[in-house]
Image 1 (cartoon, helix red, strand yellow):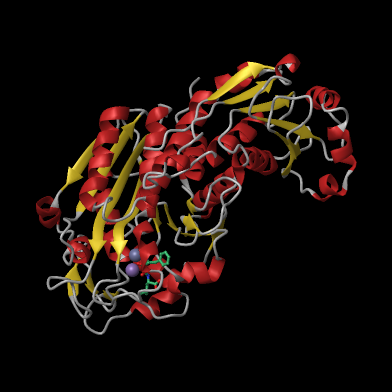
Image 2 (image 1 turned 90 degrees about the vertical axis):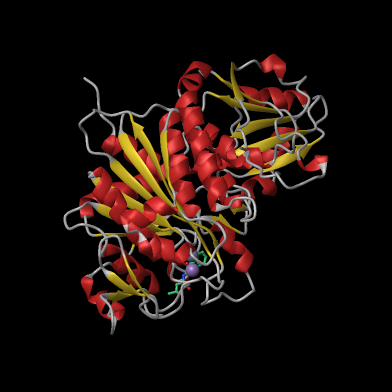
Length: 496
Ligand code: BES
Ligand code: MN
Ligand code: ZN
């Protein structure tokens, strides 16, 4: 697993600046005012920083962005990273500033001169999240060089940062865990390997992990989930992860994730162009696993159960066919019109199992469910579907606070028209119009009435082709921080 680089917090020591070999990051307010550290760098460089701040280059920087002074005279550093940032930035800008610094650390020991800035927690969070690299399959040693180069943050109150380091570290580890799973190719991350990694995480963190194999799934009647996996050599699995840090009698929050380790489309096979991206079709399951890891590492005072359906959607002689009718665990009969609409079949049974087995207080499911949500919202926001205004309001607030894009979509019953089946109770596709909504309506059938429930379609946000403020291109780990925040604010037992 990709280990987060450790960040050291120290008292601001101006005399350490000149001799730091590596990169030094310094903050300059948008009005150009230098703080203590800035003044020291300016003196060492005989006014270079002041001249940069006067320049058009600095003026053009957005707040939170950075530029470089290469080989600053009078300093041992090979570059100074100059970050435009107010003394009291908002949370998102502080996170971005941290991310920009990490993106420019160039494998060198990094000294961040934060001084008495506010929003240090977010700044350090951005620093840690952006300092991720998935180099598992780069055989050239160069790709690995400097990834573990130390990061030192100098602040006037380093104790405050050290105090929150454990919680922050737990969250960053959860995000990295989710990213690693999404970045892994499907020949490595099979259903069995995925389950084994979750079992190993259980051993490591104290999560209770249970793996259900195909025989057990058959006994439970999870035929819709099994039908998706029946065209693959890899056996389908459901993995249950439990964290019981709350009161013994408190009903858990259930998190349910789509874990399609590869989605070829099945017999309704996808076009070759871009099919390699479907190694990320287990992003919902990765998110759930990342959250569970975070909860265990920070010993959250909440009861949470994670249920992930791990299957591979492949076409072979045993694969399910278009036109097949399967009986779900709930008992509803589904006509499978398109074997590429497989995520909802997996979730139908996983959702029902989670509700029947754990009598949860609330359920949230996560899935890279539809291409249609990408048409609707692009790659900036996940689609959020719910009937419970209060619950979804809390989810959207949490997403906003951590800076993960999310947007509520409609979920009214009228869309059910599109899912009517001639032969069975429901069909698994509703045609092109509102494809993400009909997928959500399909799932709605498998949620008990009055169960607070949110469905999150993360197809557009789980994997990106461009670097972002907080992640290099590839897996984002979207949602781990939102859900962790939501749990802290809404599901965690409060003391006293
Ligand atoms: N895994 C895909 C959705 C997806 C698309 C995720 C692009 C990430 C990026 C899902 O299983 C799928 O194939 N959905 C179909 C549904 C259709 C057949 C109704 C789609 O969106 O085209
Ligand atoms: Mn599909
Ligand atoms: Zn899929």
